[in-house]
Length: 333
Image (cartoon, rainbow, N blue to C red; front, top):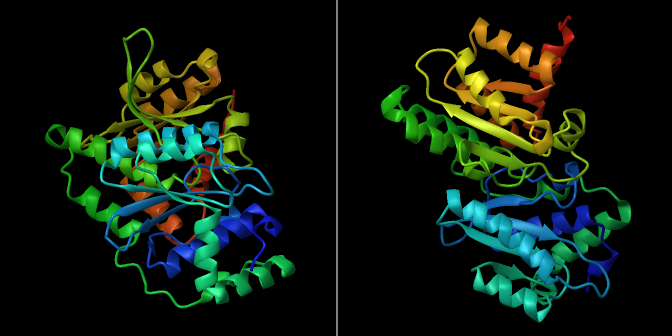
């Protein structure tokens, strides 16, 4: 029997993905667990055999460690945010350890399906070829060809779903609410393996402002973690504008009002159908030079391209990084 305690977190995530496939879960994005940081929230998105969208959270605990109530509450927090946007979704918690009684009770109460050590060992006993492949690759410390086994192609890619969703919503006031909700969900799916699910329509403590979506940046070694350090922010604020024209300076100023160093909110994204006009670009420049508040612009084509990057196993943050490099490359006093 494969010794789960001998695996590192990357190999265990690879094992979890292979078992999901074998249990007829259809992965909806390319599995590349070894290119990410550990403990980064949702680790895989799949369609379950019953057709439900499933968000898998994978956790590797070695030795006699067991999933505690604290870890269970962390999973529940992610679950609550996901279900606010995806109410029909299924949450699957895959862990290499046993669970404490309190943790299991909390997860059960919140409708979270668990694959614990006992479940995984049972699945491995029925799929000895997977156990052998993982053992071999763990010894070689090379996971690159683990996912070359045949798998039926996904019926719909994230890119195609994003394109269809955006195309179905008319620009302008009549489609405003639909665009706001759809764009928030799409951004959540795109960055789900890198950012925690957002809080939607989050009101500030004075009750005066409502942010469309606020994403927590996990404290991990990832691209977003580098942004967290560079821009002194713990959060990413997203505002969604279903404009018929370009993003204007008013949208930038509104977002900048939500950015505040004392709250560690210093990074924002304006998502709209088209890119910014010259005045909006100038307003973004002033926000950075005056207060070091960073604003990124994303249009429909950008969102579609980021979805394509997810489908191909690449990092969707790369598109944002290129925009930031273009901004800083020519910045002058």
